[in-house]
Image (cartoon, rainbow, N blue to C red; front, side, top):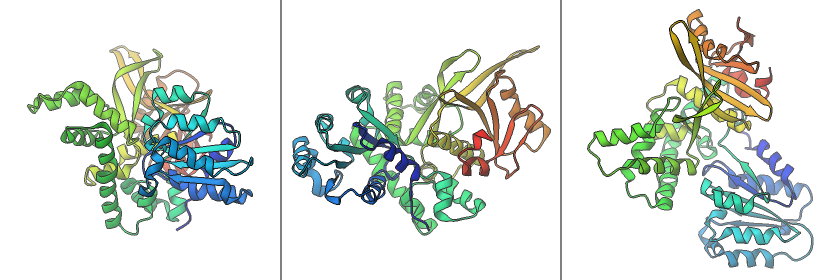
Length: 413
């Protein structure tokens, strides 16, 4: 098994080096934020001639560093280790554990010879107040579990075998490094229960753990499907649970988003050029966590493939919506769903996910929403089959999932 290099994220850090901003690395727990800082980025600095005594690293989630959760203790520790006017690189892991960390980071910003890199594991770390505090003074680098391409490169497996493992156990590096299926399952279960759930419950002082668990199960069961928090609320009411409010349901879903476990995708009316308030789609950041929550049941490959495509588009830096397009015919109005509208700067793509389009009926079904859009942006159908690129009679690009995932420029083909 090869070394985990995370080259995309290393290059982002290199590009941001000494830019006089705080570099903020965010992402789900155990996705590799700490590893990116040390050894990957630290080794890069050393290879560039930076002396090790000019790299100050503090792991704030270690018990031996508890005292540095006090802002003055942390500030004094760093400053006392700065011995000259040369550049020092400050690597602070899990900075959100420090009380009033904003003041500490602002103080470091005022030191001309400090280049600061921090990690955080929940989006409260980037809440509106903190974004305001650091607007124009920070660079966010979002890190994700291993992409399928990274997974294949590390595991050195043929595509079919890699696909089967990836859709079942996901791409969290500690899981990928486990030797067998039993270890992977046990690690995922322990990780979900003792790290993610415990963290969410304690941070948000959650009283109804049963409701939180139920919501997780509902969202895990409905990836790729439209989900309405109101319907979840009504489900609880129908069981006789009168102590749950809609606000509670919405808050619990938000907590899961804040922990980067799930991602909400809004629906966009393509022709009306406006967002639709509800329902939404939710995707899991890591499919291994989704699957272990459901005890590895409900392995519908079409929904799992859609989740993988969504995650890949996020990793590539696209903003993503679910599309809704109206079509009028003699029978009136019909509304069709476009799986993904992807935007980056002036580039836009419409993408459908389909296991196959091997019949005229299936080809028509998947092409119809794209044909109703009416603009000239590129339209793509990604299929599970390992096929050569081709365009159907409507000019839509048909691409296999293998080519899509392993070629970072696949949308440009």
